[in-house]
Length: 173
Length: 173
DNA sequence: CTTGACCCGTCTACAGCTTCACAGTGCATA
DNA sequence: TATGCACTGTGAAGCTGTAGACGGGTCAAG
Image (cartoon, chains in turn purple, brown, red, yellow):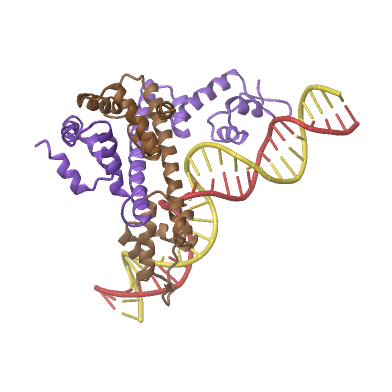
């Protein structure tokens, strides 16, 4: 039987976190000492381990409660699938913000030679590795054919303006 | 002079958001009507436009206040650079969670056209263009030497996990 | 029995809003 | 003029998950 502080230390959490978990009914100690100390048993430790595992996946505490208390098998997959979608959305948001910040940085530092640099840096690197203009061209065509979505992401990454992207992406036709 | 509801509609925000911005001193209307309605002038509209631009970059309202009220040039770059780092960290977290969720799901079904495929798509494309393993390696070394920041961004773009990135980035040493 | 390390419950704070409750305004129509 | 509806005002509370502080009780060792 562990007291709250010990359990917290064992899992690298803070006491407040466990108090909170208790307050929302996610993890309540199975016993109390005579001095009213929370006492966590082995079952509780196992439960907390599962909680931490799900938490690392970024699943909300509300959903974790659902998962632990209603052990219908399909529920888990449901929650996980949904989490995957959330993650994809969040990644999109972040990528977008990355491009925006990069753009802001490019325009902020003395108007001019920042954003075209990306493309230049890139082509210089490839040229240094022995890539010819023609190689790059057929490589883009290949990329567009194989995975147009990723290709777009890549062009975005290089800060290639929309107009130029269109030209590049029609090379193959 | 616009009332709060009109301004909100114009920017696709809610009234409460503007109320909140006023309450924290981020955007206070430059006038009031006789009935004590908030009246936003042209200056206010411009300010809000900047606010929205920064918000799209995910910059915190606190930082936006700093940027708008203390227009030292260096401050902007400072904030943006820091935001870029935050974004990189957040992307790492999400990628990690993606892997964990995928693992929990039984790793049979990959998360769509996403993460593990990226690296493979990439190397396949380069290989098809006649790049050897060794070529790629020296190319990474070159990239890291020339522009480590962009290199990291690129590795992020490929969804390479943090651990592997470290290995790649020390090839040159 | 004292000391120090723990624990109790409760409260506050963080970001960025949203939602609610209740009251006053502005304008058009009956 | 009265009515009605859409708008506005202020203030407070709620959300998520966690950290930390408070004043005071509890436990074990010395």
